[in-house]
Length: 263
Image 1 (cartoon, rainbow, N blue to C red):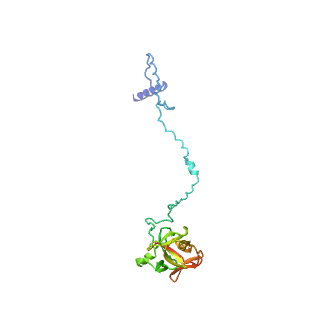
Image 2 (image 1 turned 30 degrees about the horizontal axis):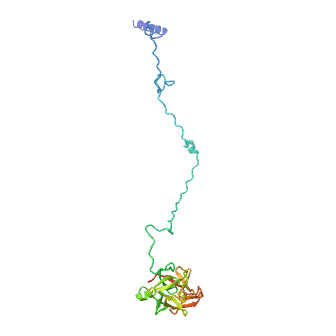
Image 3 (image 1 turned 120 degrees about the vertical axis):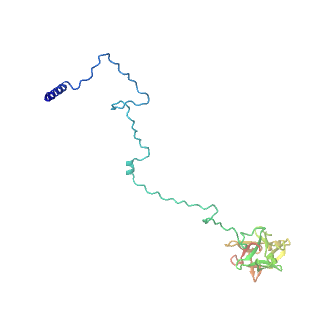
């Protein structure tokens, strides 16, 4: 019986193989159903991608961004020659106008000037003192109405310091020259008489005006002058044995004076 059953099963398998395998469901014999209407996809949505079996839109792949103008590509970067390092530029600060040289930070130039600093020139109306350029400390003064030079400093008496103070006036005979009026004897001027320097009161004569007028001759040193007589152009104011007089001389051999502020 077992053999008969096995033989029956083999026969059934052969029959199924010959008739196309498993029988399908019975076909419907009713009316055919209408096809589903095809609607267009909404605006803005992509249609089905080609090759998509389901018809669903394939996910959008971001497009590659084109290179920006002026931006080198990777290959261009590799082929570009190395750029030389830029030279370092040093900025030089100009000094302020009116300032020579460079001042250290936090320091200021001293504005104080010594009391004995020479003035710039013999200015009309200014009070001055004349010091011997070759004998510092010795100044022109009047004593007993004679013009002379004595050692006068800050420790000298008030009378000695006043005798060595003169007020510069425009030349009595020539405005381009100067005359020296006594500070403690107003109206009295240094003048030459018999080629000696004296302090006399002005008498308003032409001779006195000419005798009391001296023309400064400047030197290469600032504030240093020689004094030439107005009416005796070949003679200069000179010092000899502490006394002042007019002596024939040249600019190079004349006594030189340093114009100082009065004491």
